[in-house]
Length: 136
Image 1 (spheres, rainbow, N blue to C red):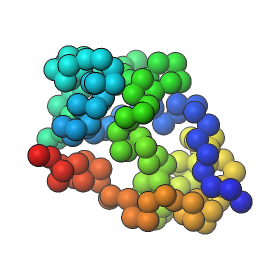
Image 2: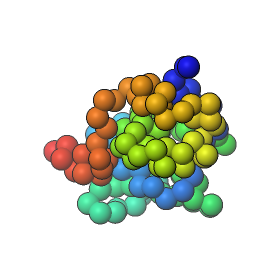
Image 3: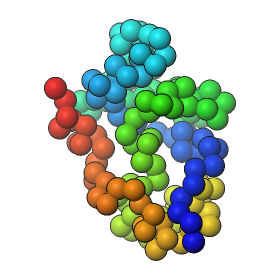
Image 4: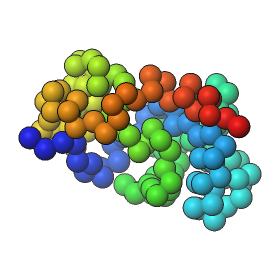
């Protein structure tokens, strides 16, 4: 069976999950949008638990989403790049089933196939802690 293939439905771009950005991530996103880091920070981010987090708008929709298109796709945050290969779904079948119910790209995969197709052998247990360790 084939591995995960994103269907670009943007379902993972809804909800409050804390899409964290370190200094480099803020610089990249701002530059991609043609903004200064200050403009980007003021209009799109909130300070939360020691890092900047992408804000959410109506119905928990990521502020960097336009229709079903990510406005910073080429420079999107690490968490977004590795979705759905997070620690929880890779190590707990019930968590994988929850993700599969919400993500059409996972609909045809069983847990074993999903784990085999993971691009990261060991994702960070916490993206927030991982990024805090990279602050410079």
